[in-house]
Length: 587
Image 1 (cartoon, rainbow, N blue to C red):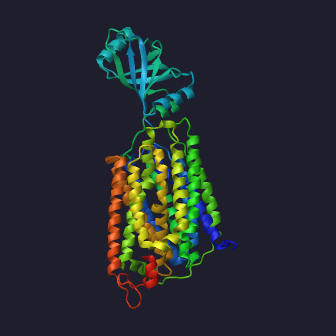
Image 2: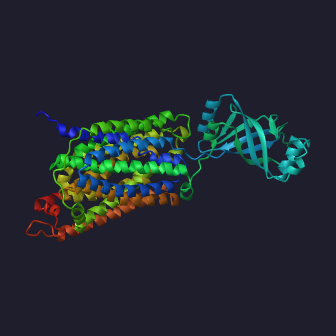
Image 3: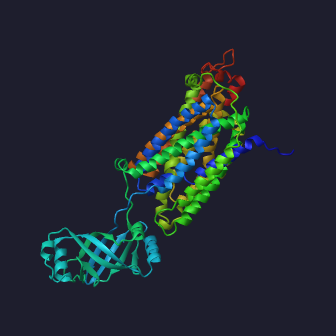
C-alpha cells in the first residue's frame, strides 16, 4: 500500500521541528550560563520559580485572546519572533567582573615564588604556558604584612635606605611589583608555583632585591595579584557567587532576567496556541498528535547535540564556556520557523459563547482536578531535570576532566538520547499506548518512571553513566506530554481548545515547575545535589502509590447515569462527551 502524505500537516510538523531546533541550543544551557555569570543555585532556582509563574499567567491570557478574538495565527507568529530576539540578546548581557586572583607569596633562603591553587590546576598550567609561552609579566602584588615581614623588607630588601620604611612597619598591607616568568610554572597537584627573579622587584618605584635570609622567619603571605592581563585573570580568579539579595541590586541581573521573562512569554504563547492549532487541524484524530510532536523531539535532539559540540569546540583553552554560536543558531532557526508557520491554515470550527464559564466547569470534576494535580506533580520533577541536572553533571565532571572537559558534548549527548532514544519512539507510539493502557494508567506509569530516574541519578559517580538513564525520558516526558495534551483536548468544551491547552500548560509549568525550581534550588544549597535527587525520587514513588490508590477507588465507586455520564464529572458538554465507550478509553 502506497504511503500518503497529509500536506495539511506538513507546516505543523515543520513548526515543531524548527521551534524545538531553535530553542534547543539555548534553553538547556541557560541555568549553567547563569552559574557562569556568577549566580548561585538559589538565584537560579528563584528565577526559575518566577518564570513558570509568568508562563502560567501568559498562557491562559493569550489562549483566551486567541479563542475570543480568533487571533491564533498572529499571536502564534508573534510569540516566535519574541522568543528568538529575546534569546539572542542574552548573548550581550555582561557577567559579574571577577575579583583579582588570590595567591601566596613565598620568600626564603634567597628564593621567591608565588603559589596558586585551583581545582583546575594542571589544566590552568597548560593553558597559561600555551598562551604566554616564554613571556615575562610585570605584576603588582598586594600582600598581608606582619611586623617581622616589614623587618625583612626594610633590612634586606630596601637596606634601610628609605625614609618611609620605619613608618610602614605598622602597615598591614605590603605592595610591591615583581616579574613572573610564565615559562617556568611548576605543578604540584592542584597548586602551581611560579618563580620570581629576586633581583627584579619594585617598591614605590624603587628597584629592590627580594632576598630573605635563611636565618630569619619564613616569609609567607596571602596576596592579590594584578598583571593587567585579562586572560590571566580569567584563568586564575575564583568565580564570585552572587546570592539573591546581592543579585537584585545589580542592573545586569535584571537585564538577564528580563530577557528570560520575554523569552518565556514567547515560548508559552507558541507552545499553547501551537498545540491548540495542531489539535484543531487533527480534528477527531487526537491519537495522531504524538506523530506530529515527535518532529519537535527530532529537532531538539539534533540541534542540542550540535550545540554542545560547538560550545566545547569554541571553548578549548578557556575556563568558561563560549556560547556565542548557540545564540546565533537560535535567532536564525527561529526565523525559519516563522516562515514555515506562516504557511499554516487553521480556522477554529467551534466557538464557545462563554469560554471562562465552560473552562471553569473543569474544576468541578473530581477526575479533572486529579488530572490537574498530576500535572503539578510532574512539573515538580520536570523542574529538577530542566534546571538542575546539568549543574549536577558539571559538579560530577570536575572530579574527572577539569576545565578542558567535554561536558557540553556530554550534555548534548544527554539531550540527543532524551530525544532519539526516549521521546521520539514514545511520541510515535503514544497513540497506541494510550489506546492500550488508557490515560490514567499512563499517568501512573509516568510517576513511577520519575521515581526510578531520580534514584538512578542519585547513584551516579561518573557523569558519563547518565547516558543510558536518559532513555527513560520517553516515559517521563514523551508519554507525559502526549497524555497531558490528549486528555486536555478530549475534556475541553467546544471552542475552548487554546484556552484549555493554555490552562493545563500553565498548571504544569506555572505551579509544578515553579514549585520544583524553588524547592530544588534551596535543596541544592542546603544539602548535596545527590541527596536532592534522592529526595525527589522517594517523593515520586510516594505520589505514584497515592495516585494509583485514588484512581482504583474512583473506578470502583464511580457509576454511569442514564445519559452515560460518569457522576463524578461536572455536567458540561465536554463531560457528556465521555460516555461509556469514551470513558473506558480515557480512564
